[in-house]
Image (tube, rainbow, N blue to C red):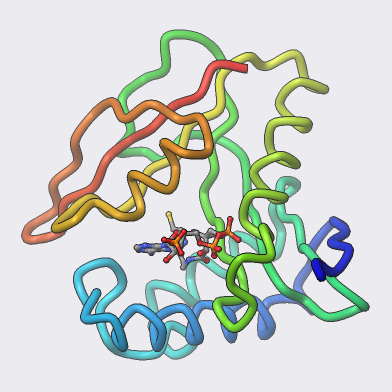
Length: 169
Ligand SMILES: CC(C)(COP(=O)(O)OP(=O)(O)OC[C@H]1O[C@@H](n2cnc3c(N)ncnc32)[C@H](O)[C@@H]1OP(=O)(O)O)[C@@H](O)C(=O)NCCC(=O)NCCS
C-alpha cells in the first residue's frame, strides 16, 4: 500500500536529510553500474554539493516530501540553471529532485513533480524545465518522458552528457 506523501517548505534544518538522500541515491546508482551521473563518492562531503546545499537551504523554492514525518524526497525549483538555454517564455526550473531510493515505486518523485507543476501554475507560469544525465540506456531521460517532459537541448561538460527537458503546462 502506498503511504500518504505530503509537501512542506524546506529549510536549513532539512539539509542533512537531503544530503543523506543523495548519498543513498549514489549508492543505488553505483550498485547498478550507473556511475556517470553523480560519480561514486558520497555527496554529503562533496564541496560542490555542500555549496549548492547552502543555496537550497535559503531558496524560496525548497520543498520537502514527507511520509509519516520522515523526509522521503526533496525538490528545489527556481530560476534556470545558468547553462540551460534561455526559455522561449517564463519558466520554472527544477534545480533538484531526489526521492528516497529505499522506497522505490512509491511515486515520491512524481508527487514532487506534480507539486512543481502546481507551483508554476499558481505563479502563472506555463513552462516547467529541468536537466538530467543522458547517457547509456537514457533511463533517466525516459523516466522524465514518462512524466510528460520532452527532451530538448543536449548538454556536455567534459565526459558528462545531459539533456534539458521541458513540459508545457
Ligand atoms: C528520479 C526520481 C526522483 C524518481 O522518483 P519516483 O517518481 O518516485 O520514481 P522511482 O524512484 O520509482 O523511479 C522511477 C524509474 O526511474 C528509474 N530511475 C530513477 N532514477 C534514475 C537514475 N538516476 N538513472 C536511471 N534510472 C533512474 C528507476 O529505476 C525506475 O525505473 P523502473 O520504473 O523501470 O523501475 C528518483 O528515482 C530518484 O531520486 N533517483 C535518484 C536521483 C536522481 O537521479 N534524481 C534526478 C536527478 S535529475
